[in-house]
Length: 330
Image (spheres, rainbow, N blue to C red):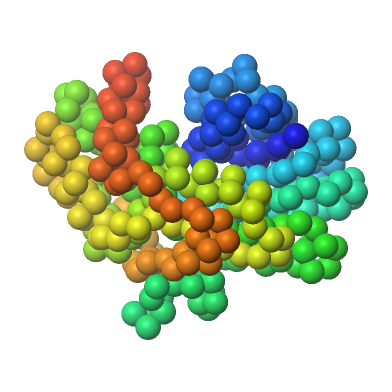
């Protein structure tokens, strides 16, 4: 079976590729990446997958590659995925996420292939919900509160439209907060673990810079997430949309406390105004009953294990590359 993963060099894409390879079912993985994409996350599997050069914003490149590969499954994970950056670069974010997804679907239509296509939307499409909306189901109104979320709403809806108009086998997910080793350091739990590891190694002053610690999140380990994605394309019906998320709900500050308790460091915690968003989504508690009913999936990895593995990852990464402890102002 030929499987395409867009965004394979990223956090979730690299974990998904590893998961599929570990199934030992002789699937052939084709990873889409741009020529300048870093390959660090693929260090353990680089010689086991087939990378190809294409860009979501270049329809011709997608057509050429899909015509040759003829994938049976497409996991569409590539995106401009950082909410804060979307406020600074809204046009780039919308072009990549909305137009890029449309290009991918057009390439499938034009080449007349018929893969199952997982389109990765986001819980950010729900925006700022009220207590009455909890837990958030797939029927909750969409109230995007950032350019990133607007792009993900577009991605979500265009995938639905291609199913309705052309019968393409699109399945959408709205993944809630997920984290783990290899997560980019601009995302909250990875930013915390990188700073704490740097403090432990004496590479940084003993201060953890934070944003809004009162936001409520339900955490899921990335390794549970990619297992869910594999079940999705094998068990779920095209045209459907699913919430996926973990089962540990707490404030971001409480998650930070768990991480600090796992560290040898005792840093101060300081709110940095630069890390506060112009508009924020502070309440995300998912209802995942629909996905569980259709697949039997349950999150298995406890948050404490996720946090431990993130700290180990950043300790090892900073020991190899201490210059990465330097924080670039965002």
